[in-house]
Image 1 (spheres, helix red, strand yellow):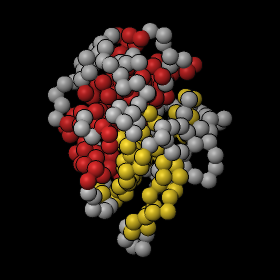
Image 2: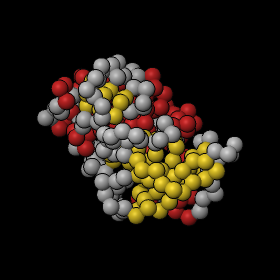
Image 3: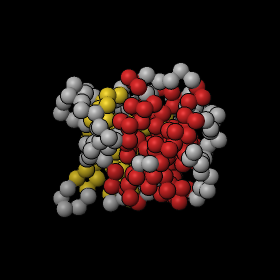
Image 4: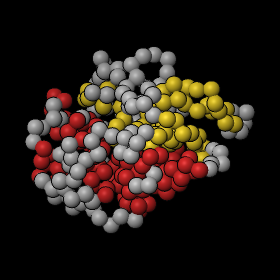
Length: 257
């Protein structure tokens, strides 16, 4: 059983008001993107107290401005892993500082319709950890996309309600929650999870299991095999897994039973 990252990898708490995107605040700084269009840096709320290092506005899949120092170093890791097919989903990289294995990584929905990825520069010396974090967060980007997931407003949910909101009927997250988190309750058997963090919620279970599958963590068991098989049967996640393994040069793949 692989050792987890505790509660460091997470998606932000959902927004439950009106008039803006979940868990983001729009700041005053911005960069010109051409055609007299300006984008602002979106300010992100965190559960932890962190120091803001800087932000990268992503334009056409690349950094929208020249980067230096720590910001450039963190962007280099993201740029080397984030698949081209999902670059349109990356709106902003926010770099913060807490402590090694503190914040680690978070994604927030952006006002642009894409996502904001936050990474902790304190983890930069551990490139493998940052790569693992990006794999995990990318699975959130795919499975919590607005086309298949609605944050917070679940009174009229036609799919499956999880703690973040409503997963559309037939989506991979809905199918995963229905099968492995019936009535929103986790199995009490730790052998059913790739690590302890996976047992905290259905969406984190899916993302940690996806990460284990992509990176070839030494996990085993009938339930974990069944979870991986469900993910492997989803075309979007299967394609993402293939892209990530190609980017990472990984040849360690968990066999699906």
